[in-house]
Image 1 (cartoon, rainbow, N blue to C red):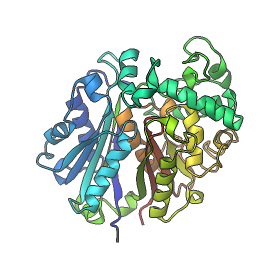
Image 2 (image 1 turned 120 degrees about the vertical axis):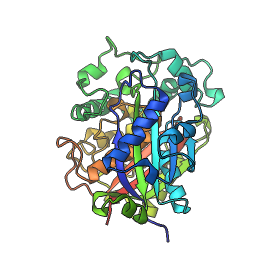
Image 3 (image 1 turned 120 degrees about the horizontal axis):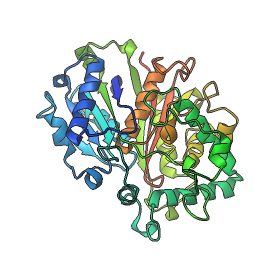
Length: 402
């Protein structure tokens, strides 16, 4: 029988800018910060996983596992660095869970981070675009300056044309998420509150990203610095940590699946891997989509928020945008999605994103979300973290520990 895995602690930085923090300092702060949440020492941790995506390209630093091992108390332990594009954070969590299931330890740490801006907080758009472009198929990069916005602009047009969805309907998703971020102290865009009119008006910062395609600036997630860390434990590990099960959330279901990298060789609006991973996570948890009443999904662009509602099983195929526009994904709706503000407004420090999704859902189930965002009677949560052009998918299902 599979051992239960619990989330014993979660910690994150505010998303946006990390300033002059170096990569070793980021990893150390993340590790020590999550340990401090439960007054634990890193020596109690048995295994670890750490992930970042653009770290070699933008920060000229590899071998992140060695930097995690530099944190006092973490040396000489099984630690690995993981990379699965924007699903890296979710993959780091699964990596730790698998180690615990294999009996390599009882307590593990998953750390995800990204530093995409310089020490003054400035962002080199061309450098970031080039670094992210490496995570697409070579055949899909030709003629694209900003590869991923271009690819998802094509996905957005296909979704709109196939399902009869308007730019306004997708734009409303951004408005909802910015509204949530207003109450999230960790959100990058906490002080920005666009209306639907702002989102649709083409002026100032808001523009069409690719000529002839519908994607606009407000449809896009942020370029973000940030870190997130999580301590996972078995029941024996919780005893060692001195953490009561009642103060934890169970990682009840989890799965990962991968589709071909090139979107032209698969049904991009019905990614088989995404649906397979989500359904396997539900099966492992012994739950269904109907049980879920809070979720965090990978809205790197607004069209993905719509599609994610379908992957979660909350909306039929082609009705994801309608689910948002009808208020079902809003706080107080049938299943509030991205109450954190999502990648659109909370921010998207790529390696940290998947960890932050699971961490925020854990806070929701424990009643620790900000009052304006707290879902009443939160009982089961789900996350959907993707990497690349809907290529890698990591899905989880959480429930209060029993």
